[in-house]
Length: 222
Image (tube, rainbow, N blue to C red; front, side, top):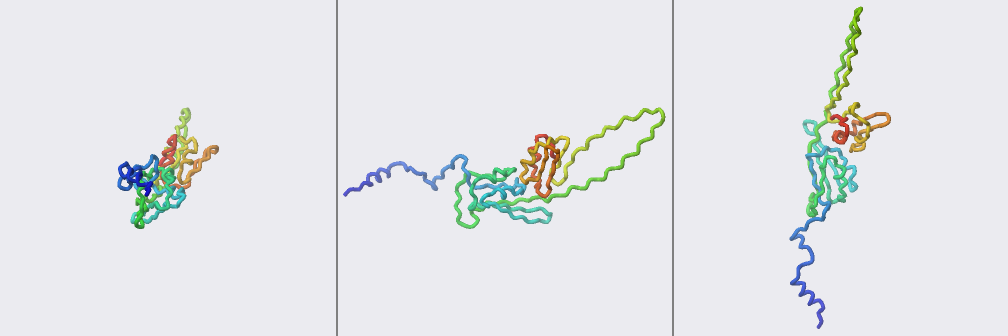
């Protein structure tokens, strides 16, 4: 009786296995592999850009107020809906989202594939109203034969921070290059290079500071 596979089976018993012995011996992921998400809530500024660009709708958040009026935000990533495209990490200006090489993602219970983190977003404080300018002193009457006084040099007022974390433009430094508007994650800045106009939409601004970081002339004050 002919057993064509007996010889091969016996040979394989004494040869080295051709497959990886996973899960007894975990294998390393390939370079640039996009695996389990790690969220760093301590650096998150709650700009919600990750939610806007997530194609799978895998990113959500909840927000409640504490006794100080601050927002206690919990951001969650559903790895069951995630496509691991890394777009959220690419758009995160604070590098709060990281895709690791961990491919061990087996869910047994509800919540096993949920990555979340909680942080406190401080309440935005409105800037204090500026005091009214003091009235200019009346010019001193000139006496006969007195030389005319030299005009006093007017010092350009220094641009002060608003006090609420949102940006203010220094027109003396700004070259209206539009880089700040292009890099703003909330599209809160409008820059007209021709008309020399810099405008902030306060409702869209999340006080992330990206505009100040990318400004080549340091013309934005926070």
